[in-house]
Length: 138
Image 1 (tube, helix red, strand yellow):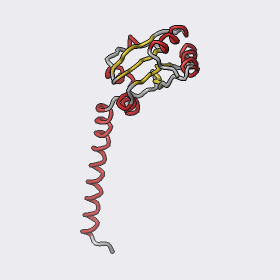
Image 2 (cartoon, helix red, strand yellow):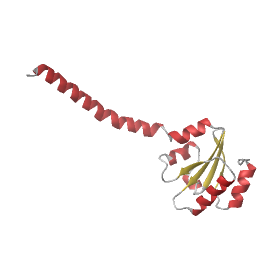
Image 3 (cartoon, helix red, strand yellow):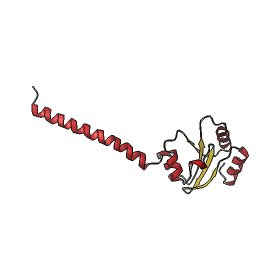
Image 4 (tube, helix red, strand yellow):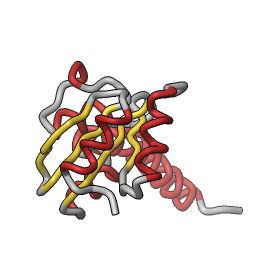
């Protein structure tokens, strides 16, 4: 037979553990979502002196053309999917940009953690000029 005191102590411990888990898990997600913009993108901005983001969208032929041009010119860039990025609007807020300013495809050039320029164009010639002006290609 099991000791009744041991069973009561074990049940209290398990109940207390359950209460802690029920309250701590939602609090963790609340604080995580409010404090961090986008861990990956924030780290990129903090770590690198010059960053180029390409804001894209699904089924965007212009996005694909610009992406091919950036690859052809050997420009280092990071894709930011407007609809799939977890904290897209928070990232724009951090960069002091509004969603109305960004229409995919958009190139955002950041230097020294500040937005230097954005290019909201679908013409390849303007993308080439942008790359040459800021000397982004190899």
